[in-house]
Length: 244
Figure 1: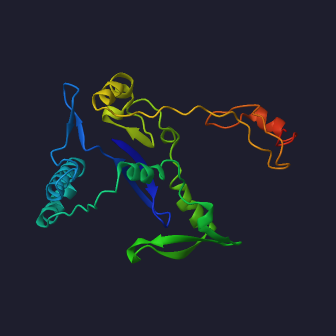
Figure 2: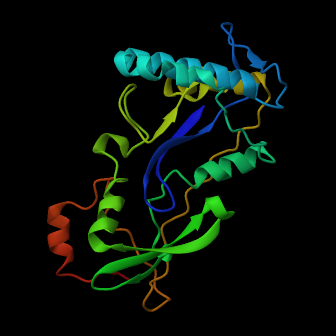
Figure 3: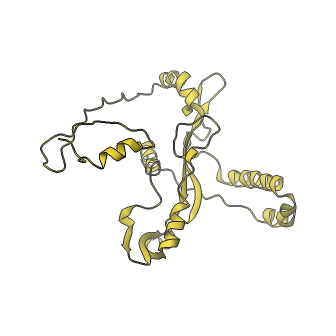
């Protein structure tokens, strides 16, 4: 599966959760693909999933906090737990497009910020408890910055390419993991007769100059994810930003 870490809610509150794409099947020990028994209608029975989730959750809680667990054990098991499940999207493409919106977003976009004055920041949010009605929230500068900083991930979480076991924002499991992709994914695609799209050739970097609209900009340097080095920043401040 593919899992994407998402940490915020509409009001910038801390709400860590995962968005996942889980395939309707898997690969057996012989490297053969097996569809799920539900034939794509659903992945797990909801009632069974509720019971298994409660058992797994309580087992972890008991191991972590045994004394507190015994105090609330009867309440945890007295009522059935509910797992909320929605109908699937219309197509696999819709699922991928939906998940793609969360891969490189930040906690709030500029267009949601409606006003900033000397004391407060006002921004728009959707209230999903009232059918997604748009509302406005006003926070002090200090509180707005505090909430925003909750969603700046630690350094090891900022990339999707890390050694196994280290934290990342995007993780790939099973036949989508790095080892599988290198060794077996191509063979699996051939067995399933999956048509793989060829990578499009990169077009030359020739954007138009934003000033004169006629000249082309030419790339003079390329930086990695850490951004421009100090020597470049010092030199660029004394030179023009654009080169025709």
